[in-house]
Length: 295
Image (cartoon, rainbow, N blue to C red):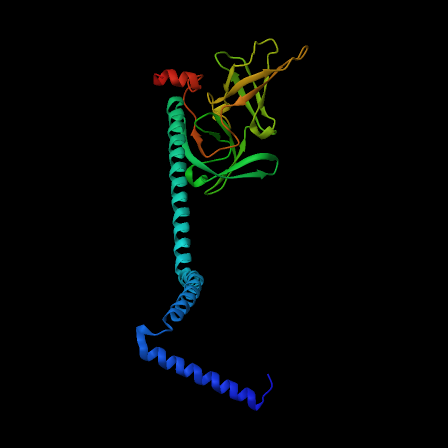
């Protein structure tokens, strides 16, 4: 619109009319002829206001949550830490119960056979020069442990000590390919030699010196014992024969046995610091032990 005299006059008339209408509406109150129009305006603008509030309130709540978020996040972290602590405590209690059970079984074996032992815990699995499969114990010369001592657990023969420091010692496992121990068939005087073959300790090789001796799967093997009980004492359960090799014409017979001791999951063990006065023979084998306990 052009800024002309006529336009300015039209704008002035409109403003004057608006003032008159507002004055009339104010003075007449509820009886104002403009009441219906005012109601329509209130309805329209009220709806717009409600819609705006519906949009603004969630946004406001969001900012309130953001304002309180640091405290809430801190509480969440505290709860997570508490949950982890409880899990660790539960795991420790379970492990302690397992170790207590293993220790009781170990002491039971030692009591039946007459072995004097020093209980120990495996703290590391490690290789050592000349041997592939060895473990570290948390006992040493300060505890009476020396080299060439027998190591067993509640299930059977584990190995022998090859090095003893003041507070730790190294044990080569029965499953090591360089390991060898004198062995005897249960219930007989048939003797041979047990060798490790690796394979994670799943099997060991038993070479029976008499090729005519009867040996079948299920026969059990115990340690024959070394002179003066070093490095191996007599009567420690070694394993159960799983299969026998055909060796026609050979001077010896070869069988493969499953060790009683799980050589891949060792925890509580015992070092035999004094051999028994008499050979316990088969008394420590699992079945004989159960019968003795009245099971």
